[in-house]
Length: 97
Image (spheres, rainbow, N blue to C red):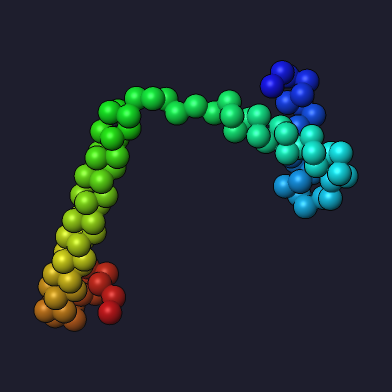
């Protein structure tokens, strides 16, 4: 799609996204532009790299879950320790609850 056609399509796209009704001719041009842009999209083709990235994401998500669980455990330990403090020490440390 050349720059001029893209400019026209983009204006139609903005109107469509905002919920404005397009005429039949505009809708046809818009649909053709959508199909043309979809056809231009290409997958990088580096599937090995994409798989590596997916694995990295899964590892990071697992680590994040582990850290959240550890944080919850630490929060429980903190509450238990704070609960064992006498009133004066709690006041000096600014412990509430």
